[in-house]
Length: 191
Image (tube, rainbow, N blue to C red):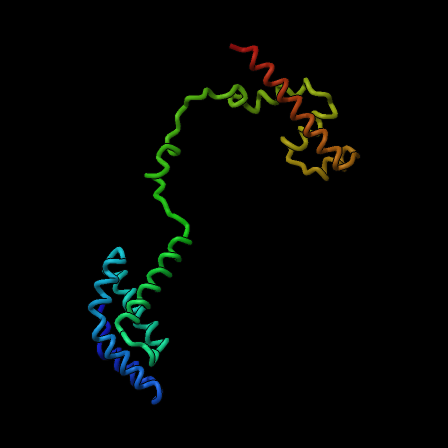
């Protein structure tokens, strides 16, 4: 994308009378430096569209700043602006999170290798748990059944059994530990 002469003329017309001289100098400098800036941008950027965007942004930055009167080499001044914009873009890109293709970079994670045998508790069913419940003390079994199978909250269980809410949590934790011991002991004895 080339910055048209009409764009430069619009910048000159929009400038205040005192700034018009600087805008005319900028338009002349731009006309002279644009091919060189485009080549530099194409070397710096990945593609032509990125290079065209960089050149356009450099023109906008130069038009916004206005060309200072003490600039001896306008082409070098515009090149410096372009280079600073490029560095700013590189820094902004470095701050962006890296994006990876899930298929390529994480192929190993997507493949599930069954190298480890499934643990014994992984084969347990709800019927196995129900069958192990009679081996628990009644105070633990009641809390476990109300919470797990009946879906009652700690508060409802505490109100029903007339105990503290904290006691419900303690009994439920102990019931789970006892069930683990009963169920793992039963599985370890099987071949």
